[in-house]
Length: 127
Image (cartoon, rainbow, N blue to C red; front, side, top):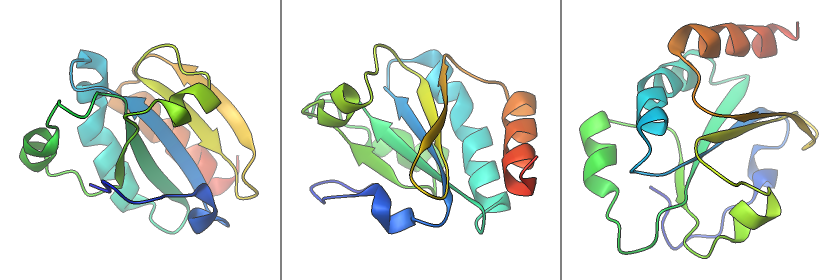
C-alpha cells in the first residue's frame, strides 16, 4: 500500500491505467479485487491497475489487503482530493486512462470477472 507517498499518474505514462475507487465497506468493491489482481498480473505490459481507497484514515485497510494478497498499487485518498478531482460520488467507480493520460471511460458500479476480463482483453489488443 502506498501510504504517505505522493503518487502521480505520470509515473505510468505510456501505459493504460485502470483507476479504481473503492472502500472497505463496499461489497462490490471487494468482489472485484481478485479479478483485478489477476488481470493486473496478466497484462503488466499493457495495463496498470491502481486502486484509490476512499476510507478515512482511521479505517485500517492493511489486514484486508494482506488477506486478499493484492499486488497492484493501493493509494489512500483520506482528504478526498482525488475523489473530488474525478467527481466520484460512490464506490466502486472506475476510470480507464489511455497511454496519453486521457480518461477514455468511466464506469460506476461493480463489474464481474467475465466483464473485466473482456474489457482488459479489448484494451490490451487495442480493439
